[in-house]
Amino acid sequence: MGLEAYARQVLDFVETHAHWAPWIAFILAFGESLAVVSLFFPATFVLVGLGALIAAGGAPFLPVWLAAALGAALGDAVSYAIGLHFKDRVRGFPILRGHPGLLDRGERFFNRWGVWSVFIGRFFGPMRAVVPLVAGMFAMPFTPFQLANITSAMLWALLLLAPSAAAMKVLGY
Image (cartoon, rainbow, N blue to C red; front, side, top):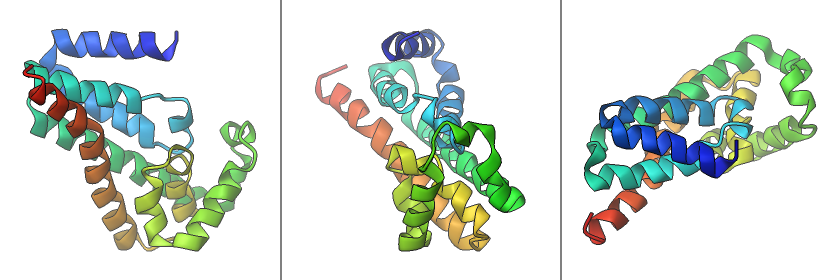
């Protein structure tokens, strides 16, 4: 199934069942933020469309935004925990074998930017897929990780949902 068909199915479902919008936003953001899985989980496009549906009266903005932020933060927290637990053994994970160099790029990014890599990496697809994992591998202290994780998740969700929601309001929907 192509990206457009996938997005249309999800958005049609949310349009029909608006009460599911926060749950859908949570699942999409979680998958989009989970280590390496995000490379195969095209949720960003759907979340932008979800913002438009919110404005069209399908669902209230605040619960959807909070759910998306929570899903994104939890996805990164799980990725961090995987890295913290498995350390360098992560390199042997089969899912990473298909993406040679991704972990190395994530490590260079992390080494250059430190805690900021967690915040900045959220906004760049390939880095979003590995920086939290690398942060765990390098045992980044939990509190700075979570601070960067949660604040970036809230901003990321807002930047995905709000522009299309605002555009729909301006257009009178």
